[in-house]
Length: 175
Image (tube, rainbow, N blue to C red; front, side, top):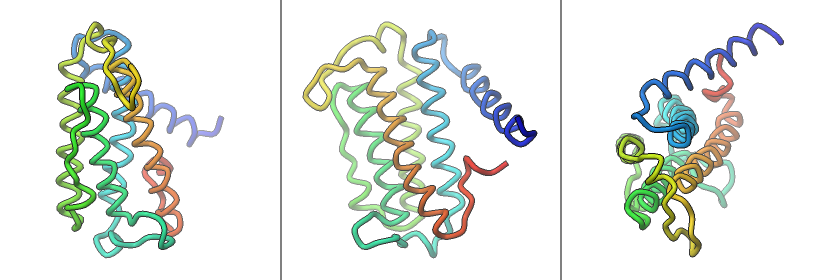
């Protein structure tokens, strides 16, 4: 293993340990989910910080979202997924339709991530295992939270591609 890969692995494990240390007195199911969410959140937040305002409305092709629309979509997703897990129904904030400037979207994204983090702090192993209806089927609250992390990382993948097209190194690739 190269030294850079070793250091990257150590950083990821250190980040995970920090997330676990900050976790509530929850068991491994909730704590593990928090790590997934934390990694996804950190990649997106660092990406938003890295994208200059003059590229906020850039899109690689006419049929895909702009940088700004991707970040706004991710913010909306936090409310939709975490709302379903925590309140039993998705919360519609319409951020992608209303927030346009980098400042507006980053503020909304910060609030959206805080909404999910607050939910994790209240979640217990027992409540995590409860089922609610999501997309027409019963799912555990924690599986919806994990679905949120997966959805966030799916769109982080879009951001990585956009950043690479603009000769930028995405946060997860920096050493």
